Length: 190
Image 1 (tube, rainbow, N blue to C red):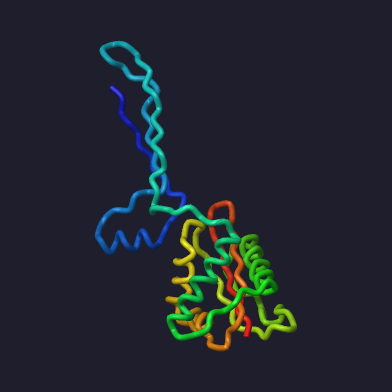
Image 2: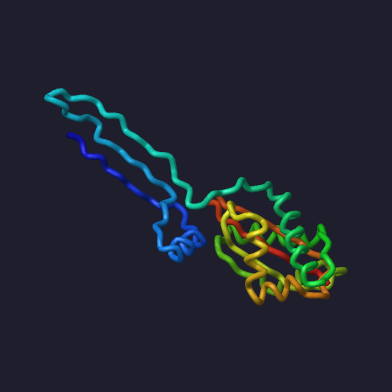
């Protein structure tokens, strides 16, 4: 008789899923599960081959397809402006120079695989744009653009930068590593 062997491994830990499961008192499905049966089984004296069964990976959350980075940049700006307008503030306009600055820092964060602010980010702004604040974030590529902006908004320090009434322009950068780790950067100009 054969005995199935089940192996579980988790490639990615998704905190919101875990938090929701704990709050509801339920179990979290692993990100990847597979089952393998022994390669042969003895049935009434006959050795019969038993196929290996590989189950598909169980998603930790229902992931939405991610938009190309250029679409994500515009979506992040749009969602940021929704929060600003809800607070009676003027929308910020995309600025190509600030987008370049933010993208450069997001690319550096991916290479370092460590979240940090650009040291003295205001010294890297173009001469004609008064420096505003910088927001940085590490999440996962399957997080929606709306969720990324919401995470900034729910953090008091980041929200203060996002809702700065003097902000007029914005630059956004998004970079994703091979494991799906996403780094996002916002640079505001006044």
